[in-house]
Image (tube, rainbow, N blue to C red; front, side, top):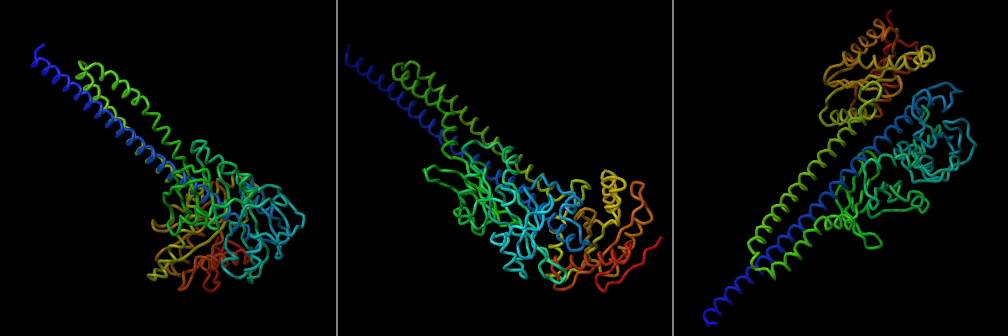
Length: 517
């Protein structure tokens, strides 16, 4: 063999070897990029899942607590306004609340001793040493002692179950303490909601108070509550922000993707964590087949220079498939994020709508009333507030049945929607009680509207049943809070009740409009 032939052979072999090296290097480079991109997208999807799980579960918790607080507000009012002999059990049944959602609804006296429950009379056990009772006994005249308090989980002395304590002070007309309402919420009540989120066994949802104490979690609930588990790290990293992503490492060194959602109306944080190792392991498993292909190609290409062109074409196709897979993953994350956002909006609508009348509920009414107070304070924007309820509605239900009573309440909602203006808000704020917020309305116009409202019900039956209503009216004043204007309208309403019903009473000076036939 001539030197020139050997040289040509070596040069040709070198080119083939170099081509093989370049091809193998290019393949592994593309494979490395694809694996890195797959892992990045997997973490992004885990972050989106954690975010949406925290928001959805947080909205559910907030709606439940708001519903329970609404029952407690109405019950507290009725305890003071109803005649002696009316029991807590009767009031809860009259207000139509699903008591099965609670472990127990209890009432203590002004010293913290048990008086009765929604099941009947209770043994007079003293609860004065409990934190959620002490906050009302120690601060009877401050905002802290009168507002809703969400206590730490305790093992009930009556129910013998772990529960989250929601308490609210009941005050007499003179401001003195009548007693304390205690709603014991079962932590397992929320289990069905986090099960619907379909998280894996390594993931966890935790509800923690701003004091750092765990209220509930999606696994080992009994053990966490018994040990008084705390998660101050969640509170510290949340800081002043309403929500945010976080990275978490447990005692075993396992890393998690986490998202903390701070409830806007209550001192609680929902944190969802997803195992980063599990997410990345699943992502790596999806690319293992390509790693195997890469090893096989390296062996084949090293021994078969003649298959170089075929191998290059195969690499190009693999790259296109990797890009297509990455694009598919991006679209999947975008679609799931959109679906979860729609679910959040649906839950928000449900949480502010009365399930029977389809009107705005007490939560929506309170939120609008606070905004009107803010506009009054900042811009001097006037508005008026009307509260009314159906006269003798309990007797009506006893006579015709609750299904007919529900039909009448639905008819009242329809009548209100046909009467109020577009900018007004009419809501069902409790059993048979309704509230109307009238923006840009003074006392005179509000009284005229209230009288038209009263006459509308007095002269036109609802679902074939004649009814009358008693109406309390007041105009917002400088320095008013949501609580003071509501109390003024409520006082006017009950003044009308005591004066014979079927009346419009002004909260400004106690003026009554006499009922007409």
